[in-house]
Image (cartoon, rainbow, N blue to C red; front, side):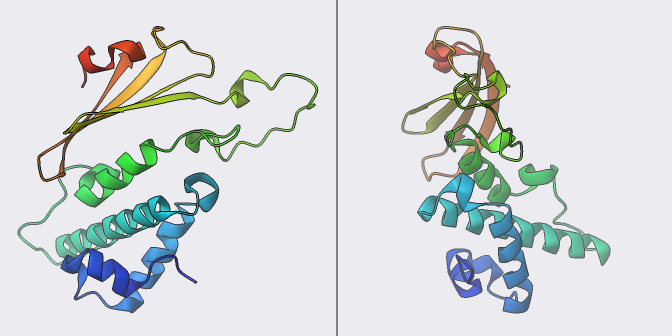
Length: 186
């Protein structure tokens, strides 16, 4: 059974009201496979991820059909998840996932057996992660396990939202977590 139905997706995103459930349902199932509970957990957070990824896949499908039939506008201005605001929101949610056990989102497909009496290999140490928020800006930092907040080994993603909560920019910087607000982002 789907985590979110076509009707629920259309209620959340009325711009897809004209799309048939026969089109939406396979896209929701695809989004569910790409938003596994083992990484996202079983919560509203995962439902949001599935909804935004489904909306992104629907929007890119519509854009592709439009370009095939020669529509004069509606072409994507970016590639991948950045090509729609739904994809950008999915990325923001995905990037905010904390490390789960010994597997991060980026290394979830790598499973390594090791002797439990020995320390885990460095590739399996949990990453450090930090978050900070202001009224219109969110920061998400990750670093290898054991990295001090004042060390330069942090990768920090900054999201800036307008007053309506719509994502305006996403930028990345490297440096010490303690300097997250003043790092040069690009």
